[in-house]
Image (tube, rainbow, N blue to C red):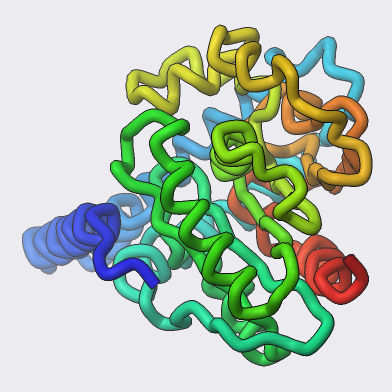
Length: 300
């Protein structure tokens, strides 16, 4: 398990800062309880309008996409689930509980282990529900921290290589890679740089911008620029890749508020699976995706 996480320290400061601001607001307006409570809630839910804006942008940006359009009800439910899930992930798991489930390097005989690869502005704490289940099931796994946080995607290959080596040594079998968002691109970059396609049992991507994402046009970090639709880095990554058929399962959603249009999260020839009505972070914790991955590790 990584010894440190600079992202955890950054997110700890952000969470504690928001809590302090909410408490200061409540104390300032203590003579008017309704204003005090409402203002504190708005401060703590500052991410909610941002998520709503992203989902509003999803529709016009996806009007020519072949995926079925999400209904208004689906988008509303996706928004609320994402509001709650983001609090769990960015307010607790990543800043404060990212060490809760250490890597497990003992596995089930005859089963593949897992390497978990998170996305942009995340750390291994993102995977807490997965790590808890993998531990309970007796599966071997390693979860990486991709750092530097705002670095280029190619720079993450070394961390993935170490994790793959550790899990392979523990199980004697190639691992299953489970990747969320940018993590899917990091996995592909590692496969290319290390010519490692025969060293993995399968790659599962969840909401990964294989063909870029509309929102990346606003990105200023190196990795954000690399995720732009029809960008040079993505074209180079795809050039010369072996067929994805039989190697990749790509889960995507028509209510993904970060990776859209929806079909940008698919790969030609992969087992592309649409799960309707799930926003970007929530998609990673849907039971059908988790069960598929754990079953796959015992059949590859």
